[in-house]
Image 1 (cartoon, rainbow, N blue to C red):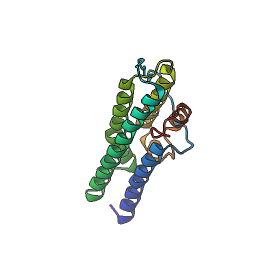
Image 2: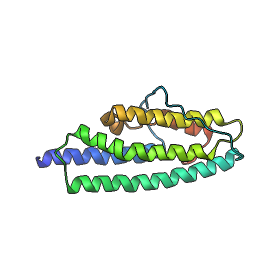
Image 3: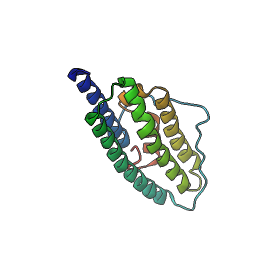
Image 4: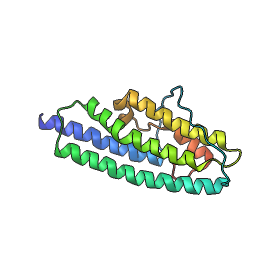
Length: 168
């Protein structure tokens, strides 16, 4: 592998890290995609909306910090032992082994909180949009990591609901 190809691959993976950090902070403009059978149902809890947002934002903050460390380790591993795999394969590895498991865990933790009474549909729509974006990423990993905002619908729903950290 030439140094130029290595620099290209490392640059793409560094861009992927930036994309993820930006997506967690909620800025962007690309479509996150949709998929059938992705609906996340949420039960009613006794939490008020303010309590739910506080707890969800705390979970999202912890998830963001863990994800940044995992992606950092992935990038270190890649730069220390650059594989002969294509950029597409590297993107697929990043999406399937790092991003999807991290976001699926986040979705399940938020779902487990339960939604405030009357907010079940809004919370379910937010979590479903995250899952649909992940499914789109699994189908087209390179496009997903190159996107300025792979979670565009989730960002809109997050802001509309009032989250301060979760894709807000």
